[in-house]
Image (tube, rainbow, N blue to C red; front, side):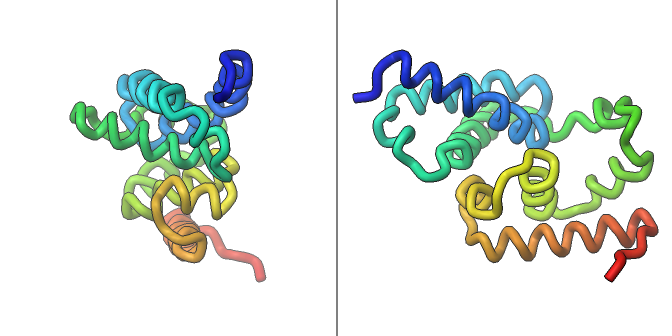
Amino acid sequence: MAGDGEFEQFVMRTEPGLRRALAGCLARDAVGDALAEAFAYAWEHRDRVMRMEHPRGYLFRVGQSKARRRKHGFLPWSSLDAMPDVEPGLVGALAALSPAQFQAVWLVHACGWTYPETAEALHVSASTVGSHVSRALGRLRERLGVVANG
């Protein structure tokens, strides 16, 4: 069984990326609860969770699932509006994506997750993640008037 110190290190490594991922997919007031629920689950099942190839993706699903049951809102778009280095049209372009496309592009590009880790989080295949990301980027480029090089 994993010790307290080992679990504490796991939380310290996992929490920042998990927080960022959940922040992109949940209302701001739901993120703390979702993190708490995910890590409570991780503690209860620590031996299994800490042996997983992509535990952050799994805990993302746990946090999202628990947060959905509480019926919070969705994205805190106003916080993106206040970010100085964000293309002004990006918020609307992101909002126009399907939920699956948004989650895939958020986890891969905003959070730096791998396709396999994102696939684990979204409970789809890595190739499906690739399709969602590719389509999302195409829609974002089109909506923002960006011409792809290549």
